[in-house]
Image (cartoon, rainbow, N blue to C red):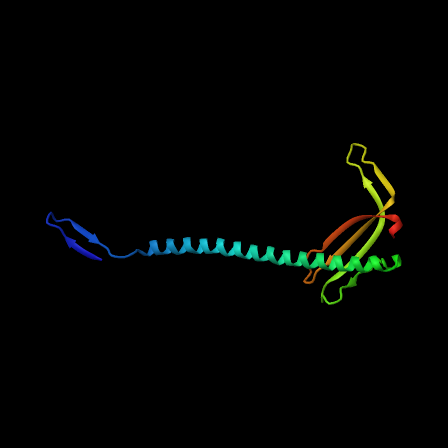
Length: 142
């Protein structure tokens, strides 16, 4: 910074750089922008990971249900079992009578003896949220 005296006796300053306040404001703006950008990347990564887990859970559900279709109906137990070739994954199959709850003012429940409700729960590793598949199947298939 250069201080000069002009012909009419006024002192003028000429600067050739940024002040400390300008640098701090620019740094704060950059920090906030990077924080927003990185949180967006982290959220995208979590969603991609959850999608991979959902795909894997669907594959497990399909293979286990295919195996149950070829076995005897007694193999449908409500115990939690580990999935072969998928460490940390487990599943549970529940079969119960189908009860349809009506959403009218009377809140009636109607039993449908011709159908059973099959609830297939796949538990991924790392204490993630389980994936639940619910299906209605004819009672004579069980």
